[in-house]
Amino acid sequence: MEILSLSALEIREKILTKKLSCQEVVKAFVEQIKKCQKYNAVLEIFDDVEEKAKEMDEKIGQGFKGKLAGVPIIIKDNILYEGKICSCSSKFLKDFVAPYNATVIEKVLAEGAIILGRANMDEFAMGSSTENSAFGVTHNPLDFDRVPGGSSGGSACAVALNMCPIALGTETGGSVRQPASYCGIYGLKPTYGRISRYGIVAFASSLDQVGIFSKTVEDNALMLEVIAGGDEHDSTSSQTAVDNYSCFENDCKYTIGIPKEIVQISQGMACQKNYQNFIDSLKKKGFAVKEISLDGISLCLPTYYILAPAEAASNLARFDGVKYTSRNKEAKTLQEIYKKSRSEGFGKEVKRRIMLGNYVLSAGLYDAYYKKAKAVQGKIISQFDKAFEQCDLIAMPTTIGEAFKIGSKPSNPIDTYKEDVFTVSANIAGVPSLSIPFGQGENGLPLGIQILAKKFDEKKIYSFANSFTKGEE
Amino acid sequence: MDLKEIKHLAELSKLEFSQEELQAFSKEFEQLVDFADIVKNSSESGQIKYAQIDMNDLRQDKPKESMSVEKLLQNTPKVASQSIVVPRIVE
Image (tube, rainbow over all chains, first blue to last red; front, side, top):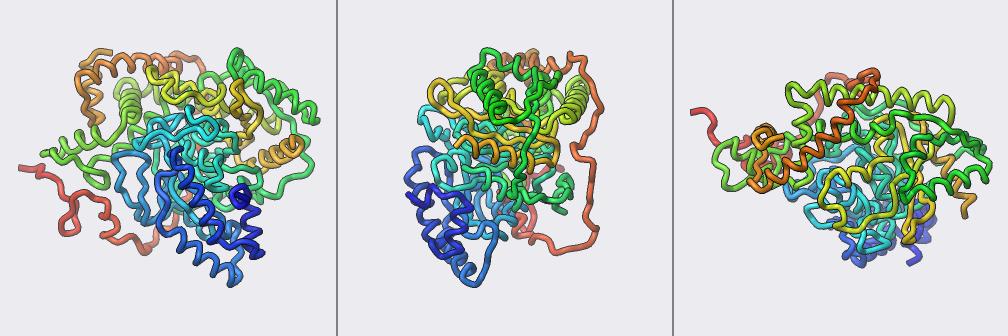
């Protein structure tokens, strides 16, 4: 039990000082994953983890001191780990074996992490609840009848239930921060371009980023230090220098911006009181609080639901039953292979988004939807730039309320999309945002507040979170 | 949006739907399009940038070791003589 509640930094420390072996650590976490099977957070425990742990113990014995030496992690099922299945929680890719490592995988392995397994998700990362997985829903770690959030729900649940200290997810519109909030942990969506996307199955390439789940701010910062940086395999990754994120700034007299439009949108929502409590708490702790304006922010959500499906429709055209997905057995012509394989391979939500994406990209409508959405995005980016001239960080709720009940939002897709109302703006603007656990809802379940910063200002976010939460304890 | 248009869109998307699914879909689609229309009808407009990041650092164009053909084809449903097999498309 003691091992399971340790942070990644503590695990590393204990392994390097020989108080624990990597094998003991891995064994404890694997047992915990097995114990928590009913939550359906982890789709597969990799069969070589004991062997890898043994190798790591030997390596550490020879003086290896990687930043993640002996630290067990879990990855979302859309990150390629060579030789392992990467299914994106889709029937279509259920047997797909990754032929190479994603850059983030190369980086965590080089620093000594042990990858325990792959976590459940909404199919192709499309959803906010993990209910869209072809392999069954993941349950909320604190209330079995509720969702853990999504699309990286398995990763969030795994960290919250101590199946690992850190897990990787991916974000396109809130898929790390929303489940982090629902599960009461930290979840980072970094600046667009901060982390290489090489080896991550693409959903909407202009928005996708790898994200990090952890139980502590320090662990989150440590992981970002390891996986951030430019990559010759991803031309959208930035060469901007990687900060020492885990060396927090001591003097954090930041000015926190509170967008008046967010205050308005949250009126009547379950998160409203908690947001106000957070603002009060900021003032009490001596942070300067400043009202700011982001007047295009209500357009972020519909803008997102044009841009993301448009890019998804194009990205998912590669899954055709020909090159690397399962192929329908009855299909006789090439056209039939495409249609029948895709129709039986993709789930309902994925089909819905492909259809919507092709609609907004179709001849005659492209200018009115896609091009217009890009113009609105331009406006939102400039509003964020202006806002950050007046404040260091921006705070807003992560979610509209607590985790919702499994099966409670089946009929109208827009209702589910509205879950992303607070998170999508960071993706649209390309700025970093960390969801920190703060407060509870009326059912005693966790809520989160997200802290946004200028592009590449992750260090400021971590320093704030560290200073703010220290005071909470 | 009528059924004919939905069917055409499905054809472009290389997806098949049953008649029932199509009916349900056309209803849903109306809501989705109404939602997208908020952007279409908005007066907000800014600079259009197709890439979020102002850079395109291409790597040196030098030959390097690459993946083996076997590895590239390991997930392909039908393979013969290091090639992907599909039904004949030219008569």
